[in-house]
Amino acid sequence: MNGLMYLHMNNSEFSEIFPWDSLNNMTGLAVLSLGGDNPFDRTPFPKEVLKLTQLNWLYLSNCSIEGQIPKEIGNLSEFINLELSLNSIYGEIPVEITKLSNLWQLELFQNGLNGTLPVGFGNLTSLKMFDASNNYLTGDLSEVRLLNQLGVVEISPVIAYLSGIILVVGHQNGRRAVDRPMGGDELLGERVDGLREKKMK
Image (cartoon, rainbow, N blue to C red):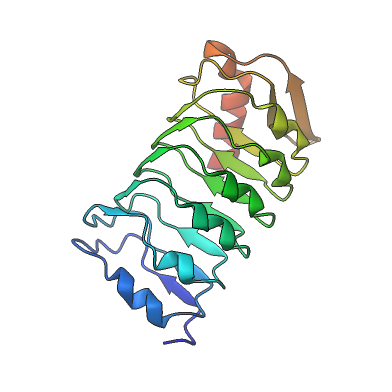
């Protein structure tokens, strides 16, 4: 199955143990999409995925992934989309993720991530959508202002200690940046309303 490029099993209700080792025979895989309503058994981030050097689209949201995001994720340089939301991932976002210069969507919401955004996050200059809401991130978001392509960013008010710049998007006349300290309820209001409106379209 080395010639297989696309594997979609979204919302297939596949349960129990996913045969991750079968990916070893799919070295040409470009898109791996397993997210949605698939109640897999809990598993660490599958090491087999890290061997798929042609992979550019990974959707493993709500796939019972637990543990930390491996540093080797930074070796998958073809990534344009990385979705790991709605899992049990904890620890810090690895600095190696900043090597993914082609990445335009990064979805990490509703996990147990903590710490700060990694130094070099501003290197993700292709990033258009970033959602890390419902985690436990703290620190400075000032590198986000370097991301000129960023259209949607959503971070939960649980990160009451974040400070720096937040990008506000959504009006037809283009992106706007709001320069203000962020904390508590200041993260809500017009910014979140705009994001919800955009996501519904």
